[in-house]
Length: 280
Image 1 (cartoon, rainbow, N blue to C red):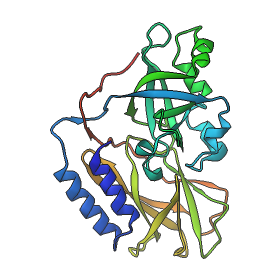
Image 2 (image 1 turned 45 degrees about the vertical axis):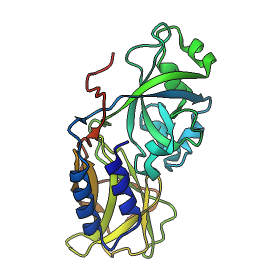
Image 3 (image 1 turned 135 degrees about the vertical axis):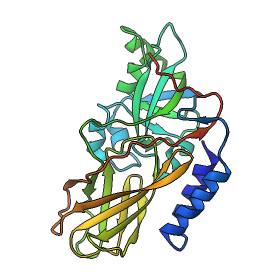
Image 4 (image 1 turned 90 degrees about the vertical axis):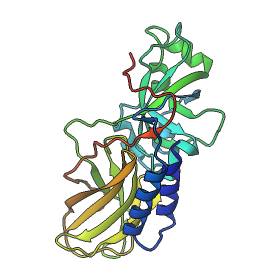
């Protein structure tokens, strides 16, 4: 994992004075720690196991619940803490393939991160559907019988055709004093490391905190229609993304709202070897 990302995340979660200061320090650290070997996709080697029940992953630490099954057709994954990044990597997409060519395809499978893997014996625990999808045609049951396999993997951009980043208002929200939201369908190859909220038309921004996984909350809820801005990792740097009108003044719990924006940026890593070529 890129050490600069770890430092920026640590700064964000410490809630130092302001989001603006967090962004400035992140930019500075990212610049200082930039590597000459900048990769869009770094190749990693580990092992992967699987859960027989996909609901174990959909009910995972990211908080997607049943919505997880709609993210990648049930191809879900739990990842170790270094990949989970305290929830910042929830919704991240990875391509994984097993290293036995007689058993597995060269394309492997694409998964969405929905949970934290507490077992450090493998970097990933996949849904059985995703685990089976790594196999060559007709070899699905054979790979399941192994239970655990050697794999290589890389982070890849998430792509949601005709789908913007979405904001779901959680049932725990209590208008007008508390708002909890869940971010869905985050595109690109980035993490959201900070988030602010303000009334539409106002420049008086309040920071939101990551409650857990993909869920952010605040007890300082502005009145009226609401806008959001996000700090996302991009390249060896970071950037603001501004969703100017997201929640109406009469927002409701349990409802998912279109942010009107989508993230397409790619956060580069410093590593060797790079693997920017497509698999399959």
